[in-house]
Length: 210
Image (tube, rainbow, N blue to C red; front, side, top):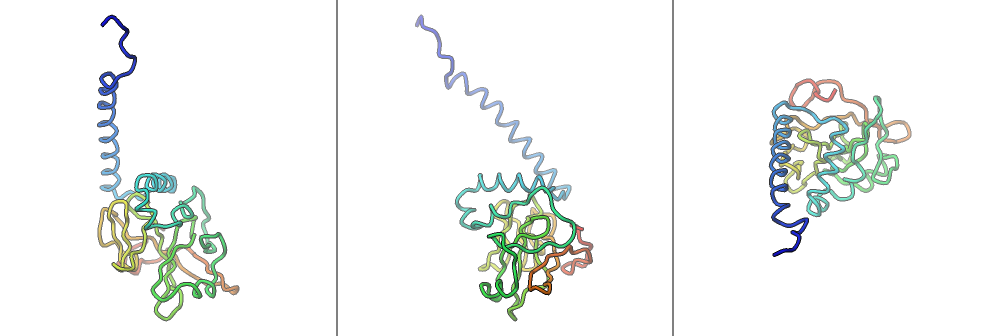
């Protein structure tokens, strides 16, 4: 009634919000479907970005599941090509004596492995460390997959992918099984992770990660 209209109001702002939201949603949906259909394995940079987005989006429920390891094991953008000394959550070298003193039979716990990726060390029933480790990065969109001891399988909290106790994919949308790495012990009792380049013992196929 004779005055100047407000510069910003719910009426003037609403169309902009409504127009921009569907485009973003559709674009992300198409990108996600394309990645799933093509079986694309995310690059190291994509893994890093997806882990950060996941931590922010999932919030406290995921934090309770993944624990402090999420922040420790966000994959860096660079890494070596040969073997890597396994590092614990504090950044210390992992030795079999120390590891087995705090991890019982059946344990599957994270260490920092090849190229900085979070990798599960597995303790066998005879209280020795399994000769292979499992890369914890989900092959769908790069989330860190926690071990669910009650269900006896790895269950991704991001999109529901599941892997059995050996890391073999048993439920999508992940297109591939978890990557393998050799677990060796040097003369100083230090755990070393080396690339797995031979046949995948779980399905008899070639290693997709090599």
